[in-house]
Length: 235
Image 1: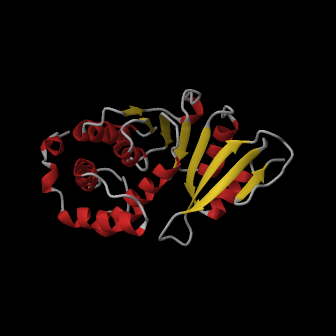
Image 2 (image 1 turned 120 degrees about the horizontal axis):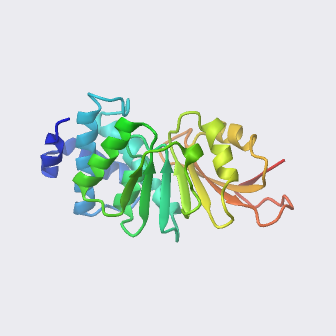
């Protein structure tokens, strides 16, 4: 496989993407990125476009759509990282939200968990090209991977999410949290499968009528008392 992409200069990336990203962040109510962070995400986008011609990473590739639906969408989750210092993205695919969050929060150690070998290679190449010292790639299925060492678990576009993720959530320790990018429909299907008690807080993703972030925490009590903006999931 050619390594030409790793020799590209970030300044050569399509300026339309940088413009669209700046606009999308403003629409999402997010802080501006530094020039270095913009360059890192632009480099990732350039690699995404090139690699997507060889392997199926995403259907959303136009600069404006990618900036909004992939990058700004992923970066919105940065609001909910809180005090977490380790994060794992389950089924990272092209690196959403893992790459965006690693760029946003260099103080957080981010692991991209991806079972597909070709996608894992892309993620490793991207981490190298972006010089992400806080980014690791693990090539494994989530069912066989030890998640106990991570403060925050997240997932955005995992295949068979409603079948796979409830078991992942039920394995969480009390101090762990799960941040799920999803639709209300997917959230409902997942919570219906949960046997243990969890508190779920939802936050609407800006510029979307059907996308939310759901934050799962283990309930401290089993009283079933619901707080405003939260739903209690259990038997």
